[in-house]
Amino acid sequence: MQYALVDHQRIEARPKKRGKCEMCGSLLIAKCGSRKLHHWAHFRERNCDPWWENETQWHRDWKNLFPKECREIYHVADDGEIHRADIKSSTGIYIEVQHSSMTDQEREARENFYKNMIWIVDGTPFKNNFDIYHMLPPPNSKMAKDIVWAKAKRHMNGANAGMFFRLSDNPKETKATLKGGLLHSMREVKEELENAYDGHHQYDWVRPRGTWLDSKVPVFIDFGDCYVVQLMTYDESKLRCVRLVSKQKLVHDINTETKADNIATRFYKIEK
Figure (cartoon, helix red, strand yellow):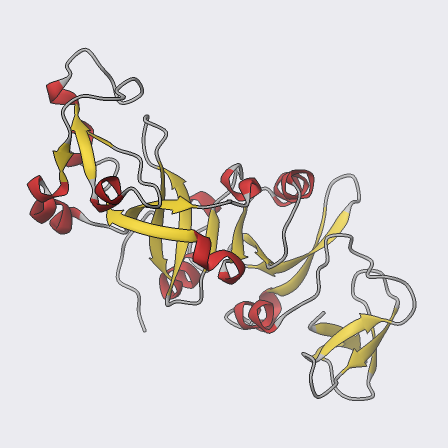
């Protein structure tokens, strides 16, 4: 934990300090070794929140992007169940910052508990298995309405560069039913696509952590770049895609929007 109560004040761990857990009231000991991230730990019993995981510098860096009063916020459900969220924005959006793998059951439990939430997932452990391919037009654009994209996969160089079918070539089909026909190349639409581009891409995730694909709330993967990767479904063809969202934009929207689903859906000038 980053914070404990010391003399009724929330403070970060300091050498030889003792504090009190805000959630259960138990004694906390400051852990401040030279090789470990400074943190608070329960003196005897295990952590009082079963959803807790060891905090890394990556966790701490994300939490530190938000004001102190938004970090490690306790949420109590109507039935009395209580958990400690990594971050809760001033607008009411919960953010869970997740490094380790997770079962479907725990993911679903957290989503049902917090409801208005997003995931930020550490993608560095599987970065080499995650390939981002060609640009896609905005799903609701006029250009996209006539196109069904061939699924990109590792080692499929044609589809990875961008190949598609046109509904206008197959008037009896829909996006949900069209599986074949005359293939078109990205070269035909490259200029139009570049002008319409808003961050969508095809991708392939080799040996995916499937629970994130089934999430009912927005999932953003952090690969250590200046942007995060949002997992999405593109259109009625059920094509999986990603959208690149700058970290600055993500943090801004978390602190501005009141609904998690609205993050990165509206575009306006961000004041520096």
